[in-house]
Amino acid sequence: MDNSEIYSCRQSAGRYAVSIRNRQEIVSALATFCKDKNIRSGEISGIGAVDKAVLRFFNPQTKQYVDRTFTGQMEIAGLAGNISTLDGEIYLHLHITLGCEDYSAKAGHLLSAVLSGAGEFFITDFGTELKRTFDPDLRLNCYDF
Ligand code: FE
Image (tube, rainbow, N blue to C red):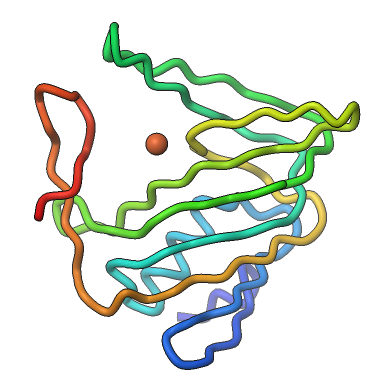
C-alpha cells in the first residue's frame, strides 16, 4: 500500500528514519508505518513541531485517565516510545515533551498530535513480537513476558 502522502522513510539495517508529512496526525501515521513494515516490537524516538496535541495523565489512585488538549505552536522537545501488540494489533506506547513559545513545557502520554512543520522519527525494529495484556489490578496494558 502506498502511504507516501503520510510519510517517507529510509532504512539502514534494522533502523528506519521516518519523515512524517506536515499536517498528519503523528500517532496514526506511526501506526501506519509500523503496519506497513510489519514492525511488532521496537523503539521510537522523534523531534519536530505540532500545533495541537492531546495528552493523557494516568492517576494511579483513581485508576482514571485525564485527557487534555493543547493548541498553539509547540516543539516536540522529545518523543519516546515503544511498539508492541495488544490482541494481535500494533500498539504504540508514546510519551512526549512539548516546548511552548514561552519556553515552558507540557508533557505526558501522547494520544494524538497534528504536525505543524517537520516530524523526524527514528524507529528500531526489535525483530520479534512483544505482547501486552490488560492488567486488571493496575488497569493498564502491560508487557506480558
Ligand atoms: Fe504511558
